[in-house]
Length: 386
Ligand SMILES: [Zn+2]
View 1 (spheres, rainbow, N blue to C red):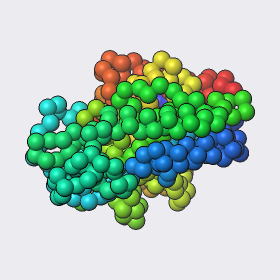
View 2: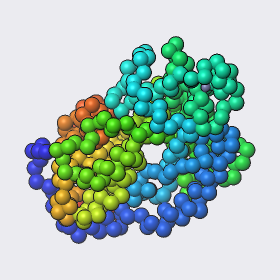
View 3: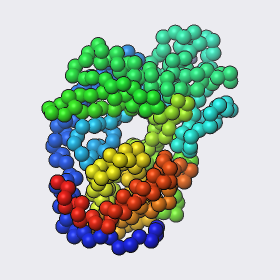
View 4: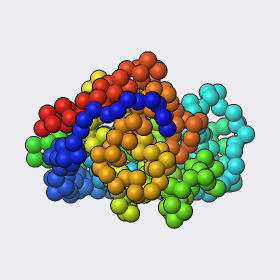
């Protein structure tokens, strides 16, 4: 990892730790009150209602996102919840690839099609054959025109756009029937979430509900973990392989892998042997929000920074490498510049098949120059930001 960078601008250690304390760490109490009193009761209530309307969704959910990873760096105004769908269990993923070829090539290795095998009962099946009422947790409740496209082979292609549309309808209806304090926002195309807002004290908290298909990733046939690397530890690898990944609806045809539960497992105890990996990432996330987010909202996102940390942990696997906060933070910035200059940030789990940067090299070069500008005079920024 060498991209011939000059020396860093002067930055005394106490300025970095003061920045962390004063500008980055959100008082945990604020956040948990917003979650506990404002958001959770509404989410529970709505998903219960959704489940009554369509048993394929809810009422269970899991928290996700930077709050739960302990990486929130701004006001607690956004929370994510994963909503595992019912009835699509792992047995459909052990079946091997379908023979059906899709018209459109998948955008990259993070997208997969989901096929349901033909119903064994064929025409006799009351659920998918004659369109009768779905039994809530059977695979046949997904062999339906409103969520899947029947294939000539007898298989069904689970259609992400249709699934999101059905989910959105149920959420909207649940809220219409029992609005409570909640308002729904418009569902955007190709986003994996239904978003609504909950007012809490002075804030308007935005809540994302993300339906997920739990995918056991049979055999875990992806490049990660790379066997020659000593991070993560074998125990951690075992844990994440058992957790599996999820699929989210981020395309109109293909489902996209989401490693959010696995990332949470990695981040949760990332510093258990000591070190400042997590705080380095927090500082970098905060600097992105303050300096670069406005100009490059989509080109450089917080997921990029998290991935940069994972790559840096692989290159520097030992806690001793991360003992010093300032050095750890500088390392992350230098890794970020390396990837920006290279124009490629490989997906940590899916490897170089998937470049997480989605914009032109010229934009990445521009961002890199901005990061380098910060690198030349970090003190100026870290001190003035209050
Ligand atoms: Zn059936």
